[in-house]
Length: 267
Image 1 (spheres, one colour):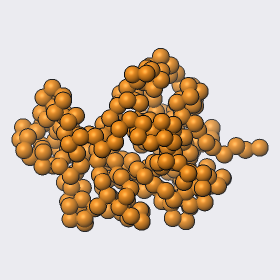
Image 2 (cartoon, rainbow, N blue to C red):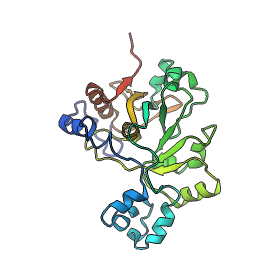
Image 3 (cartoon, rainbow, N blue to C red):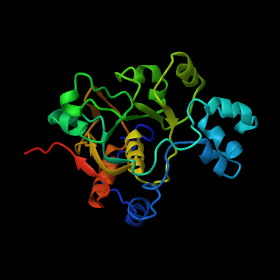
């Protein structure tokens, strides 16, 4: 069941292939040639960007940025002036999900061979390197993980891992960045409108990968039909959001040649 609605998840999903082709395969496609990191340049380029958009990326909104100086101050720790990454900056990228299915194969060495590796939330590599690798270039965080930013960055042995938050910045997050201090680059994500694609941090991680990588492979995004809860390779199972919709979406993306999905095959 969907936690929010209590309704049973559907077993059939329809996707607009024309829309997917426009977003991902057209030479001028929105995702492959877009900048997915929030910048001052992006906000400045929007009509009334500071008053009509910037406040949406700050927790509590600060009166719709009527005080632009205050909004600037709140966003300062996480928005650069210009994009820190460009389309196709990396050749081959791996997006590593959190499915318990990862423990069925030794993908670790294979994952570490990619030019960039993207992980999500608090997924650890320590004690699991044979299965998930140890390389981490980017980590995409949801709201809950962003609240534990100091613990998230402690998962990395160095400050080279770039943190990308898909929601808003909070005062306590700003304080952590300044006072802990957190040396990792921390940015906010600008998402492309993908319509009825899939839900959760995973699809945002893939979206980011497609914006900076030539080729994208995904691992740990599987769920078996008849599931009761999300499985995770590093902790107990928990309830999640429509994983079969995600599975259908990723299979559609693979059929279009946009991504390559790696998963355990039962013989």
